[in-house]
Length: 86
Image (cartoon, rainbow, N blue to C red; front, side, top):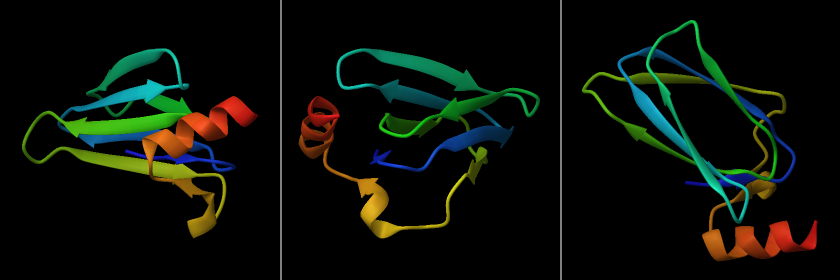
C-alpha cells in the first residue's frame, strides 16, 4: 500500500496468486497475477496494493531504481495531493 514518485516496478507472481490493485488517484484497476509468464508494470505515481490470495504465494518485484526512502508515498491522502500537483 504505497506509491513511488520516481521508481517503476515490474511484478511477477512466481508461486500462488497475488491480486494487485492500482489507483491513479481517481480510477482503480485490478489484476490477478497467478502465473510466472505474466507480469505487471506499475509506473511511478501509481498507488499499488497487493493481496496474497493463496498460502505460499510469492511476488518478485524488479525496480528501475535503487531503494530511496524519500521516493515512497505511504499515506493515501498525501498520494492524492501529490497526484493533484503533478
